[in-house]
Length: 93
Image (cartoon, helix red, strand yellow):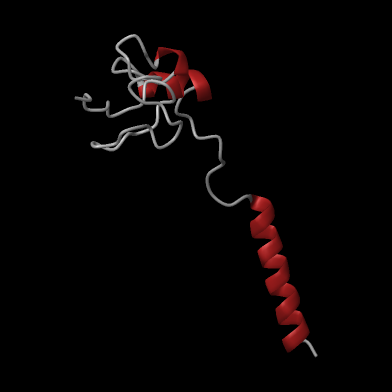
């Protein structure tokens, strides 16, 4: 009698449906990849000890947002200039 498949394929790491006879992603089954010796450790998948906040800090250098806040003075000057040009064009004629 075949054993129940694992929830995650130990060969490729894909999700395996509960009553599947083989992995829908790579085709592994009891004979090719679901043996007790098979493991997904070589895939580099995070385990229960994975700390997401530490990963983000190491990968992106902290939580500081690099985007500037507010509207630059250049955009304010451009808007005022365009408004002035529109008023001069429509009212100055």
